[in-house]
Length: 72
Ligand SMILES: [Zn+2]
Image (cartoon, rainbow, N blue to C red; front, side, top):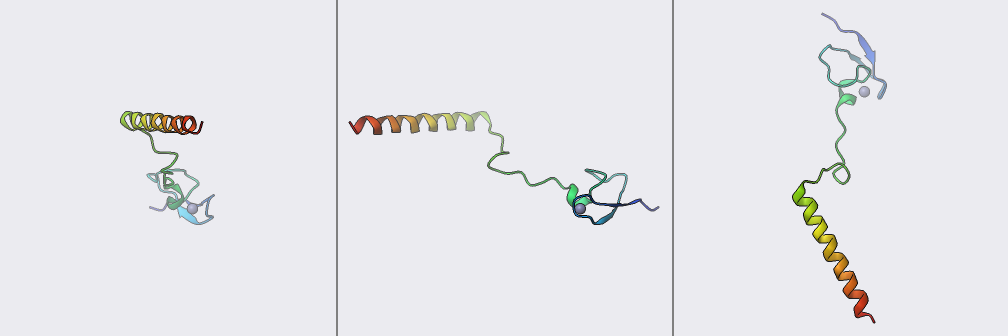
């Protein structure tokens, strides 16, 4: 059985459009692969991490406050 040949809209390479191909029908398998998530923006924080960050922020604010007041 042959599959229809499509041209990838991303890299312009021809590829076989297989029925079970994941991702977009107009992208080759390589370009259908999910992009690597950006660890700095995409990473979801869990409750513990959020709490730790809040505490870190609070500690930072406190440190800045002390720094400001000690300058008087
Ligand atoms: Zn492609």
